Length: 259
Image (cartoon, rainbow, N blue to C red; front, side):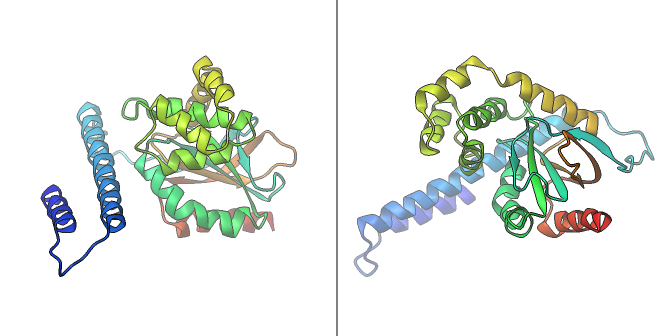
């Protein structure tokens, strides 16, 4: 039904009678909107299929079993991309996957609020760790490497943003285009990405995430910042793409302990 509706809208747009005049630019704009909706549909349908596959492969939990309550986790932040004041009282660590639509939703809807209220004000240090779900997101691992290659040229966060803004375009050719748009040196980026030099770092993030209890993305940990430390002890854990209020509550609870 959605596809039929889109086709109908498109036909009406390009063949409207004289009573509804449209310029070439109007038609082009409509086509761009239709393409954007189609890309979003493809991403959602793909994710549904991936979830179905995982459910079919998964092992049912034991009857009556309850999830273990989160207590704390010690996480390394040494060498990880950091946004904000390094001495902020609270550190928020995100484990992310560039091909994950839920991570994309967090990026577009919640991350900007965290940035405005906590990062820019110096209250929170934001740390990114990679957790590409390779079994269902085959392009995510290389995208994580691409972001780190951007970091080599001092543009990790610019590349991070480009990747999340273009989640349906993460092939090698796409990554090169995003690097150019982010202002990176194309030759250096290509050499870095093809060398696979950051693959071990991505693997290390995945391993530590699993140890901390991460099973899906996005996953967040909140803890007090240790002065000049390379690790944090997280006392709050947020699972999945939660609304801003959920992350805000966790941050405020940790800030309260600092006071």
